[in-house]
Image (cartoon, rainbow, N blue to C red; front, side, top):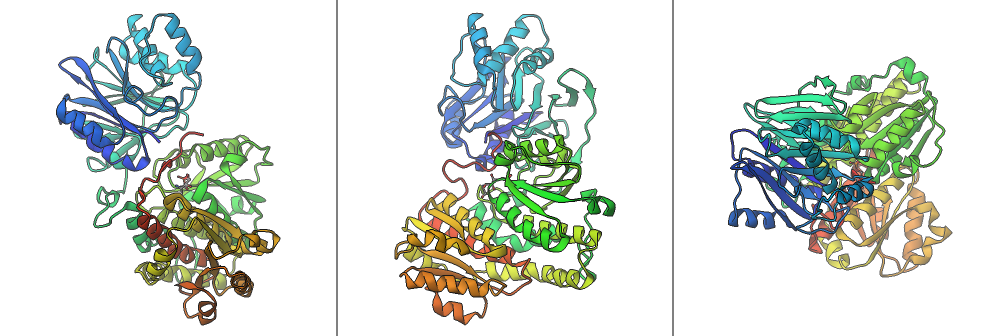
Length: 613
Ligand code: AGP
């Protein structure tokens, strides 16, 4: 998705914005640009490709000022090119804007503007906005009014930032819908703006988050907020906990490598003080759910996308087992378009690392309209998902920069277990003994994860032998069937190998026809209630000359003897086992992708947060 950065203050604005854009590179983009106001005129530098192209351009032809806006574009309308890169200006160079989102009614607006002799310089939908603002200025509006009226004419979800040489001390920004956030950073005599906090975290932790339909007029001295209709509003400053270091790579080669490695810490942080390890009692005050509310729940729907949707499939097992609430899991992109049966007795749980995924936000809106109580498990503090929820569980993993989600996934598993325990305790379906057993498993979990991740497993032989294979099959059963799906997603999204996750029990209904010497089969066969079934599955694959990479419980010599390769994790409570099971699969995907020379942190075609449909 597009990245947005703005600065106004006493420091070199172009440099401040450029450095902010570099911290957003992980979002995935195909062009970039910056606008500033220099000697009373708007100056723009923009180019196709990565930021290094823009850096070269700025070195050859510098632009400097004390206010600037910058953008990394992920093309939706108009191919990646210099002419389509943001910022866009009107013909006279009076206004410059950057935008994240899609102007759904840009075509009729463009036709009307061209009929009034506006000259368009790009193929983008975005450019209609700058011409609308310019037209209002020519009609006598001041800059803020000109923006407000222009923003009122466009449909769709947007985050927009505008500059004008007529009032060179201010930036005007608006958030419309869910096309990605607008976060303001409060400095001392300077102000910052970004679509994501890592872009400005090194300068301030005082953040203000725009809601849907809110505008801000920003100068070095401060900011004034209003609704799109002009009604003034007050906004609170949130002191965020994230520190700049945690958003950097440190000694790791990739953000994904760092984020896999730091899961012992992120699991510790997400558990936090939410459970009393002695009694097993769980406290989730930010959930805003009383025992009476919990007892009133008749069913749950968990909705999410991608990796978060696979986490939801694990959560179903946890919640049905401990809270005895029927749970339905649905992809958010599907949920929002079917006629879901939702009422005031339905609890909707949304899982989203970014808290900005368009499909997930739309599904939440749909459920809210039908009377459901909304709770969410999110990582990004201040994200839209958090703000529209009735209650929230923050993952507290720190920024997850790698596009392929790892530490957020395991955090969301633990957070769902804590939720299941809390619901079970409030509904009287979870006894003290089981609570204590789970608490002890959670107490041991971070250290166990740390041991698994300290390269307790040898991936070299597997990667050397299979890194050029074209197909992989991942098999799991019970609570670890979703881990087979997640392991396959990790491999395909960063190594680009076709990998499919499948319920092991379904193999005999067709997919076993695929088994041959060429397609390695990763089989999750932990010592749990379906262990014997999985061992039998491994034997069936071997009987057809298949290759098996088994994921087994430490000490399981029987599975090790059957499989061609074995990865191991320590024993734990069955409901906690998915958290450990996924770790070697994350590492396997990472090592395979590195061996294939791929861009692990920014895989082709992918974005960290999909804020458009
Ligand atoms: C996960 O590795 C992918 N990057 C993707 O499937 C992601 O999980 C999905 O887009 C949902 O993102 P969210 O958790 O931020 O909503």
